[in-house]
Structures are given as C-alpha cells and as structure tokens.
Image (cartoon, rainbow, N blue to C red; front, side, top):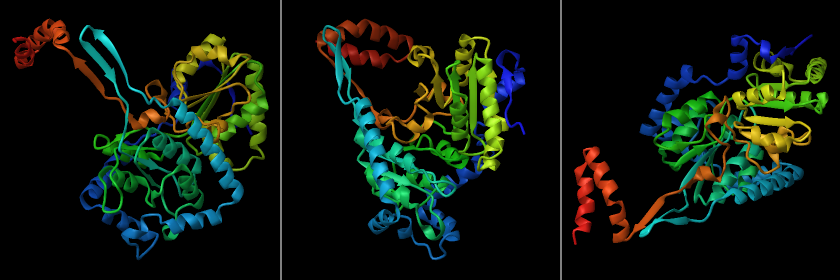
Length: 432
C-alpha cells in the first residue's frame, strides 16, 4: 500500500501546490461564535460558567476544586517516576539557560542631536497565563516551554491552566513540570473556559496581561476572542515539518522525522523538498514500508495522505525558494554544510541544522522553545521567547537647545495635521 508518493515540484498543479502550502491550517470560523459566547459569559458570571461545564466530571464541584493544591502537587511527585522527574529537571535547566541568554535586560540611550537624549528601557509584564493542553494528550514539555520564559523575563504572577480528567484530576506529569518550572498557581480548567478565565479574571483565577501556549481550534478561537483585553502569542495550529535535504540525507532518518511529526494528530503535516530524486524515492519507499507495521496508523494515514508531500526540486535554489514560501513551523536542513544554508532561510519557526538535530531535540531538551508559529505564520511571527513577556518603553530627555532643534519640524507637521495646540505646547516653552 502506498501512503506517500514522489512529485516533481515544477510539475505541481496550482491546486496541488496550494494544498501543500495551506496544509491543514486551523479554520476557527465554524466555532468562533460559540466560543465567543462562552468567553462573554465568563466575563459576566466568572467561575460559575466553568463549574457548570465541569459538572460532567464531578457532580458536586465547587470553586475550590478548580485550583491545584500543594497536596495534589506532592501526590503528583509520588506518581511520576524518578527518571521522568530527573529528565524534566535536565530539560528545564537547558530551557532556562537558553532563555536567559536571549533576555535583553539593559536600557540603552543615544544622543540624537545636541540636547536630545532618547532611549529604551525593558520591563516585564506583571502577569502571564500559560495554557497547557491536556486530556487527549499531555505535554509536560509545553509546561516548561511556556512558564520558564515568563519567569526568566521577570513576570511576577504566572498562571497555568490545564484540562482535568475525570473527577477534576490534573495530569500528574504536568503538575510536576509546572512545579519544576516555578509555577504554583495552577488551575484545572481547559479550552475557552481557561482562556476566558485568565483574560477576564474570576473569583478564583487571576486576570493576566498575556496568554500563551498551544491548543486546539477552540483554544485558538478563544484567544482571538479575548485579544485586546489581553495580549496573545501567535495563532497555533497543527504541528508541521519541512525537511530541506541534499544527497547526504539518510532515507531512514528522514522517514522517521516524517513519522515523528505526523504522530501528533491527523491534521499534522510533513514535507521533504530535495533536488536529489534518488533520495526522494528512497524516503517514499521507507515511509511506505514502515507504514505496514507502524502503530497509530489511524492518525498517521490522514496526515500523510492529505497534508504531506515528497517533492523533487529542479535545483537547490528552487528547493530553498519553496522552503521560504512554505514557512514551516519546524525546518530541518540536512545538507553537506547546513550552516551555509542558514543565511538563505527567511521564514521558519525553529531551524534544525544537520542530521543529528531532529525536531524532537528542540521539542524537549536542547533549550530552544517549541511553542512556534504554524500555517505560514512564521512569515510574521517568531517562536515564544522572553521577548513575549517584556515591554520596551522608550524615553527622551530634552534640553531647551534640543527642543529648539526640533521646533520647526514639530510646528510645521502639527499645523499640517490640523493640530495647532501641539505646536503651542512647543512655542510656550521657547518664548522665555
């Protein structure tokens, strides 16, 4: 059975090319109105909305059941194996090390002209909310990836929300990861209920300045609905990878990189683009052969058949152009000298260089962040970083000489804009 086939990039129809580029970008239009109603209801009625929703998990639920207690965190450590705890701490150390290196701490200033000092300072947000997916799958790695950058940036109040299982029990590994990351304000709510609770604040859940973290289309729709009341990170859709390779690529490794991404869900996407036809065919053969015996085929098959592709480019230049057009969440560059290719890449969420840098390295432990823009949003967004939790106000200090230097421009432009009192605020200072 063939699950994937090889195609020549230059021979794709316009429709097929667009299908590959658009992959399975989340369409939130069909759920947005319903989600917005939930968010508005929480804005008005607070915790009561979430309690009504979660009666399906615990009939006698009370507001106190939403917050994770210290006893629950202690119990979670008892349930999670020592090896998992140890490796979560190892990953957390690398993530913190990387994000501390990218943290811009210092103000700067410059003399624009005599008497005009201008600059910028850096200040953290007061609070941040981290959405942690749950129920369908549990992602303690996402706990580390969202909480640690906020803490490193200096955010004082960090709130985490994650969907509970039956009887309002949160995933143990996620609780341990949150504790390791340094967050104790953890709440057992998910979906639009979590997003709206963090955006508007409730009797139990603190209001935050920004909400970050991956989620399904209901979470994305909720983040869009509350945007403006709070800031949000980039819209996050299904996971995706593009592999740019030459004849040095190993077919079995690349095939497994396909599988490691499309195992996320049926809407995930994987693409190989290479000028080497032999490699392309070998990767296709490897994927098709492994599919006969691999687990979770009900998830893998739709992702491979509908959202994935193996493309032969006429040249490496054509392959790079397509790579930039695709703007992948994850980009692997498997070439003789991947560092020489790096300056040619314009759009990607996170870039993995060389055969020993597969995407799972960044997903878990290398230190870079795995909360990344999907669906071509890498053309306009970056992955999550300490910058997401910082504000950078500008400042200026002017002497009378400096204001005099600017006065002609200010008076002329303010008159042109029909705002003469702006000019008067200058004149009154220069009359003495």
